[in-house]
Image (cartoon, helix red, strand yellow):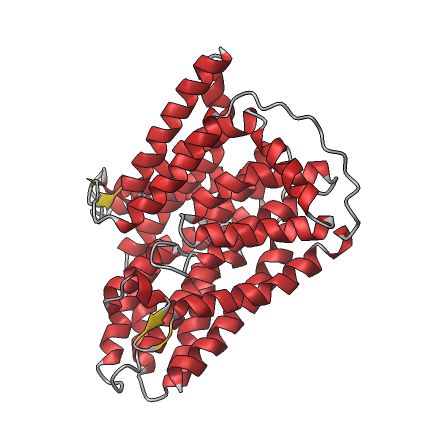
Length: 433
């Protein structure tokens, strides 16, 4: 059964790469085949495949999609784009600034939420300065993934690391008297700025731009979006959880509530049909693609493939800490480009914990940090390696732009390699020697 599920999983990715316009069908069929096979084999009860769906991500995606849809329709992104352009010396500065801003926001807010909030502004800026929004949105997405590991509240994997090492929010800055993982991530970001400049190097023309008299329909969606942002940040610091089937869905419910309020307020203020507002805001293809992807990854985890990956690391042993660290970082990059990083990190943490028993006191910290660097940044290697990338490309396709794999690879691959190498070297110099 393990070989069968792995074969379907690999075949699914072949079809996603070969036929990106039909990726939802590819993942849907693969999820159905593997789920039915595991149910027939009595590995799953009939309802269990659905338990692998990360409801918090889906709720957050739906809620913010709705709020951002109202935000975009209010013309506020156009107004903000005008303001941003007027402050920048040239187009290059404006586009690099948006990507860096995405990273800064993502350090305290979920990556998907960050992309959904900034994408409308990015598209508006790109259109106003007459450049393709494709590299703009891709840069926003990969930057958000990079900064997710910077703080305790930036990403689920950061929370998992904190639990494993007993870290609090401030330990991400200074841990055990040494500069912590925050600085490794920020160094990675610093080294990616030249990559962004290289990507947008042709857009160095001076902005001779006349401000339009953009009239914002209503400020309500903007206020609700800011409230949503604030509530997400606050919820990260409060020890309160609402769970469904053991999953914390607090952030998702916050976004759903804000989305509902935004669509009701906007519908009333603009006298539009509620159904039309919802239909125009939701990207159902992206939503179902993520749902199917969660299901099949759950099947992969169920048959023990991810556990096998962890066991392979444990067989390496602990005789050479640098070799073990190197393998963990770069294999995590590769695995996380195809496997969701949450189950992967969950599998690897106990493995590193076992390895730490044979290492000198404190030596295992470099392995924990290396795992987070590789697993978090690895998603930027592929269009489907991280939810933020999937959502960003979904937004572009909904806007009518044909995004090819090559469009993503020429940004994601150099961005990932530079960021990982910077974090890899820094972490070893601080924690490994």
